[in-house]
Length: 304
Image (tube, rainbow, N blue to C red; front, side, top):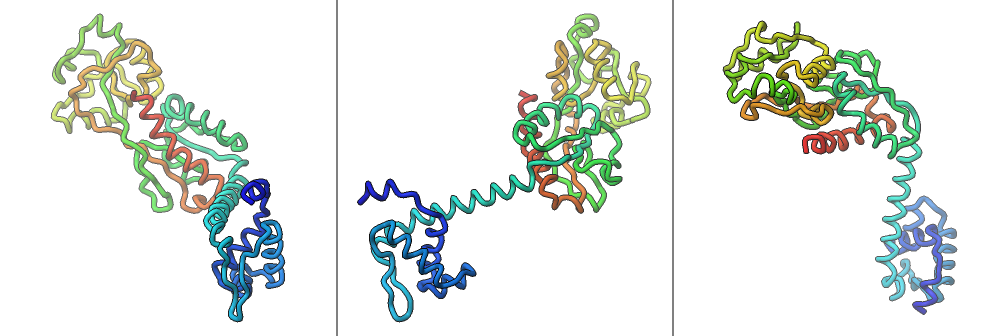
């Protein structure tokens, strides 16, 4: 009989009806549970019994009692039920989130160095999803609905946004090897006063950060200044001086190396944000969940 059973191809509808009757203890109870007709369930059970060549239930005045065969196949039937449920959920997600366009906004630096490998993986996993990448340092474009999802290095404060912290990105002092060969390698924070430093123009983030560390550096200490972060990175990579950047950039700048590892520069938080009203979109949620998993992994990879 085992060989005969191995050759059977069970109809899931029959197995579902069998489990409903088994759990309810009666055809009537099973019919109520499934929202089906009692004769239909009776026919399903009879057909399954015919395939197995043995009865599954004994009819009683109050309902049915499972036979030894019914009890023997119950666990396998429940595994089949769990598999069918998983398949149904997967197909539902697939139908809801395999096509459409999602706009993602992030800073110019993250758009150039952090997100490209992440979005390449997204395209492999979800070829039906089209992505529009908005490289902008303006944090308000999510509120203006110019994008669906934002990857930001500052926590969104607006109540209409839902934000999730993904990671803390190390900020490092660094310089190209050619600069260090010309000017030497700083050994202490005070040594920075003897070097050519690259800073921001109107943005005082770097100056405030050093002041908090007890190392005030006046604006004039930074002999090259720009608020354009892409230009800032290229100045570091060209050997123009010592700069302070997110650690993940260094992987893309051959010859640039960290200096002063003892500096306790506060890390940069990485936040993923979405507008509260559209987070229920299956398409947006699929991309949001993918980024939430892939970005920390990519940061870890680039740090290694």
